[in-house]
Length: 257
Image: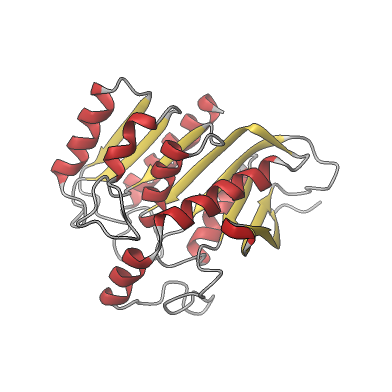
């Protein structure tokens, strides 16, 4: 019997019917006749569907989830160096990171993720009522925004997504916090207090806004953890915080799904 999760490459129709590449990662021994399980739409960091993200998908699959990993760069291609087994976390230029995040249309990405949840929920082996969205960094912001704009997700896990953008644009037309009143599913938001890209006061704005709006949420800030602390492939990895955040995420999803 196989002991590792099953990974399949596929495409599904995103915004405007565009074909989006994605991975579907399922528990070991999965088959067409497999039982109905909860699903996860897993949203990548700026670095795309890299080795770290596929490892996270496999970890979720081992816990009994079917995981869809959309490639939000399917149309234009990966804007930076690709992750490989030889170099799983290649360095990206800071300007490339900034330009990529700023240039990705929120509207398009959210439509792509909503379509991904619809695709996942239409499968006979996924419970459409029990699909969560989980995202990291740029993907964390998109996970939060998806929780505010889509009705397809039963729970949201946001790893250090920005509550506030530095500036608005045609691609980022609305501050994430401005959509918070529309959030009507449970949220787990995870941050580090040594994050040099998300000011502590922005995290507190988020906490107070969630409290004032009486939302169903958990918000955790890890002492000493910086941005992208969960990514063990990169220099900012904070092992103790990452281990606790993983267990907290699993407990949250088990309770909410």
